[in-house]
Image (cartoon, rainbow, N blue to C red):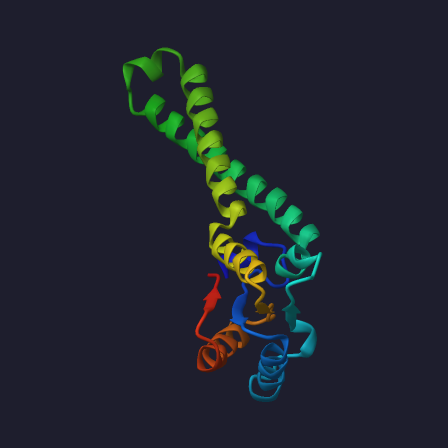
Length: 176
């Protein structure tokens, strides 16, 4: 639920499997479409000479940009509000420094709340869970292997794909 609120990507999670040949990857793709109800357009195969492999790993550049804006607005506004509430609480609570200058105290706590909120937004936007997939894809392609990536629309589809891929590949990675 929270993931849907914060992200603008249609496929924010992914599963990756590494295969020794393109034929093995094609067979895995067929197996996934047969047994997991995934559509062929949700499954991408990246071969060693693919110059645009990064677009297949992260195909939703516009969605990522919208996620960046959405998370920064939501977390920034939330931090600003919580900081303001905290400053108001200090002032009403009779803390001498805050009570002597309530506007400054409330403004400062609101500012710090905004900064903390924006830092959390940056963390949510960075998607550190995608780094292992990008790194393993790069390493697999450099060693001449083929990579299959699943961008399923549902979490259930991703779980099914991961379960099936673990049966046929020894190297499977997934995001949150």
